[in-house]
Image 1 (tube, one colour):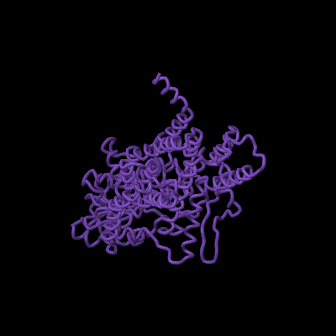
Image 2 (image 1 turned 120 degrees about the vertical axis):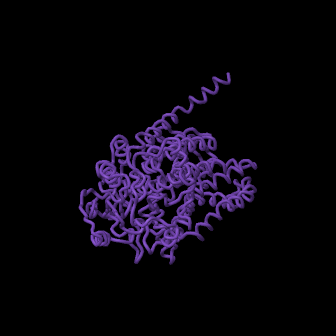
Image 3 (image 1 turned 30 degrees about the vertical axis):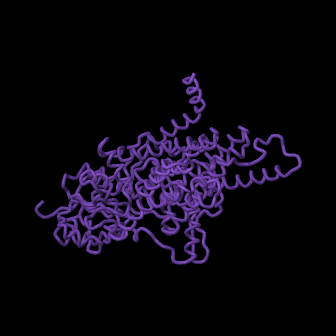
Length: 582
């Protein structure tokens, strides 16, 4: 009897099983086909060094790996600015599967797929509605931004999984065991990315001001000191022994800066999630419910005549909104509006599953048990952009909104149809079976075919993925103005790290002309002055980032972009250097 009841219970969830299967196909298909982009290369290269040294060192004897020119490093050249969870997770995958693209991305893909499962289970358990749980999972699977983050070797996937787990644990936190679990998840969120602490703070504050969270309040008193003890020392260490925190953050100088950044954070969040539609639908449904409730003859079709939302549904929505707002504030207080426009939701990736959960609750409650209305709303939210900001700012194709000396940038697709329909999912599905090489892939393939082991290479960008794929020593990696220059000299790093000594290849990315602190003319002058001869051997398209995972800047396999490119660049080049006596 028990077995048959269990099977019957599982069969009730068959619609979600289909969603989970579709999600797995969209996330795992040809996961290792395309090269790691620049930020992924940072994760993979440092994870590789963990296997050698036990810690993420930036120097392994052949290449100096730090795109911030040493600002993230301590005196032992160990990266200490960014927490280490993503690096050790990648290193563990390398142990199991070898050092390759698939292994680098696999644990993060698993985390993303598990976040779909966790969203479903959490909402089903808390709301007792399979329809709400299914809707949230389906909206997440249909989010192109979620899928792009799911397939990269970076912290975004971990943040999305952990924030859902955090919510589940918080709502269950009525014992010492669950309190300890809340501490664990909170600490993991921080050590995945420091901004991950924002949802923790949001839920903690709500426990003191929102009566239904009173049972959690007593446990927050125990959890907060433990979380602080396991996170604040990292901030202190990274601030005292490196300059990376100051380099990678920007504090607003005026009240106008604050408003500008908050507006840009709002734009980024509402451009890739259905928050606009969710808010409007919630207000409309709430108004209708209020009118019906106060009418003399309420309609008999009302399913929940007493309340529009159940207690747990209200609590989830409030927690979600508080966490989203605090995630936005955290990024706005530390990143310029330009940085937010470029990075999109990368720093606030927990917003993606949270927004899906909020939308699911509002969609199902608005449909009031009408299956046709429910399906229609899911299709609108999942396959169009009507619930997002995009079509509502289409009147301004240039995207820039100015107010005096302040300005923000919206994201308006090039084609009119793309401003309304979610055509990105079709392009994404097509690209699962089509290679999408960018500049990194092209240059690495050339070097692997033509360079010899031990050939010294100069790059002006993309150091980490290039080293991960070629293992060629890299010259001119540390300049006198870098914060680690003197320490690197003391540690006895070889001379080629500081100059052009016996360099054989130059990869010059046109989009990053002076990024390292020198220009191509400077390098050429130094090499020629030493007797070297430079010959251009390849020119290739400059794709800026290796197919950025942020949908507003993502390049698809046919070379197209959903959103306009703000700048194009000349071809990037590879040159061979020949020296006298070669």
